Length: 176
Figure (cartoon, helix red, strand yellow):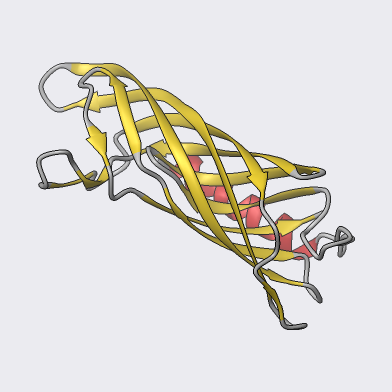
C-alpha cells in the first residue's frame, strides 16, 4: 500500500511541474493526460490519450467495488483489496456549451476491467468485468486540466455475474 501512495505522490509532483499543453480545435485537451480517478472496479492513476474524436482512458491501481447491486443493496470496498486495471474506448460527442472559462462536453463508450481481489475467505481471486461509460467533461481552456464525472453501469463477469447499475466514476487529469 505504501508503494501505491508513493506512485500517486510522484505522479502528482510531475503533473504540477509539467509544461502547459495545447488544446484541440474544439477546446478539448490534446495529447496525453494523467491524474487520479476511479472507475467501475479500479481506483488509482487515471490516464487518457485523445485521438481525434476518440479517446483511450485507463485506470491502474487498487481494486474496489462500490455502487448499487442488482438486488438494490449497497456494496462498497472498505479498503484496497487488490490490484487492477480498467480500460475504456470513448467517443467524443459534440460540445454542450462553451462559456469561455469552462467548456462542458460529453462522451460515451465502454470497456473492460481485470484484476485480483483478496477475498476474505477464499484468498486471491481473479475478477473480470465490463462497463458502459457516459461522462460529462468539465474542460478549462486556460489550463490543460479536465474534471470528468461518469455514470458507469458495470457487469462483474467473473466470479459472480453481478450487475451494478449505479456505478459512478470521477477523474481529474493534467494534459502534457
